[in-house]
Image (cartoon, rainbow, N blue to C red; front, side, top):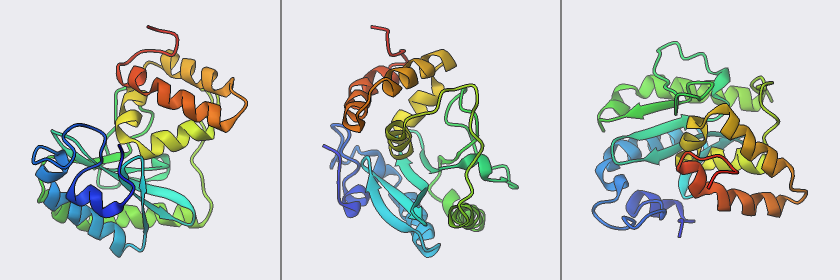
Length: 207
């Protein structure tokens, strides 16, 4: 079961897999770097919450960034990354079909401190856009994503990475399916049901 208390993430993990609260949890391997990232987000004045089992940082009612840890790396992923100028060229794409580079990926705990000034600057830039109500341009090639899917992708880094790695056609199959549901609770239930299929790289109608 996913965690709901923020401190649990930094001491036990996200709760999404069987490695939760064990020495094998990815948050243990990257503990130093994760805590440095957390400190930078809090020093920036961001509000810290738990979404989909991960530390999410908000400002002016908008999601700004989210932290995630994996076996091979840990990441700070930005929402509305299309707005970020990335003068230092540190942002990477989550997958080959991702439209915009939106994450800073770390394979060394010490690299967070080395990039502290850059990270703080990017957070401040993103906070400014949120404060001023500026949104990134919409992708006109894709039907509008339902709010429930946007929230799920924003808060679940594993799901977001897998969804953005799908072909445009497979992405569209989920959007069309979800937009066909009239009630928010139905869309949320479908997203939960689709999660494993998305991570497996399949479309909504594939078995």
